Length: 169
Image 1 (cartoon, rainbow, N blue to C red):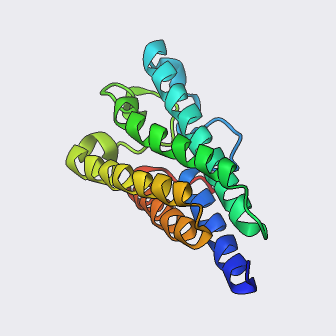
Image 2: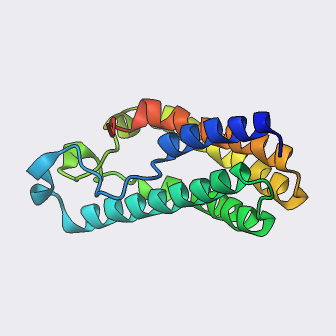
């Protein structure tokens, strides 16, 4: 793998991990103690979505790490790309009414998700459209194609985070 490709992969890695929440092992919270007032079932849904996004972040990290090597493990990339695609399909079910911060749920999700459902649905669709492209690129075994698809999929994550997730700084 050329030095310029490794530089590109490193840049994509930082971008994708920041976009998809990888590397943050703490429970998501922007609401402080307000979760004590949340419906326990609603909090459980929020916790499930948090775990799902953690899995998504881990899959992105695996792909990124592999793209940085001189000889990526294509099987590991393929497995992680499948996780990305499977997770993208689940996301719409993770945001039902009653699981917003305004409902007392401890979450980094912004109320904008429920206030602008068409915009949120479009953001999810962008990820759902990018994920199969990543899977196809992974199946091809072509590192350059994987890198480009990874960049596009990471961009879909970043797009959503910019509008629908509280800053996790």
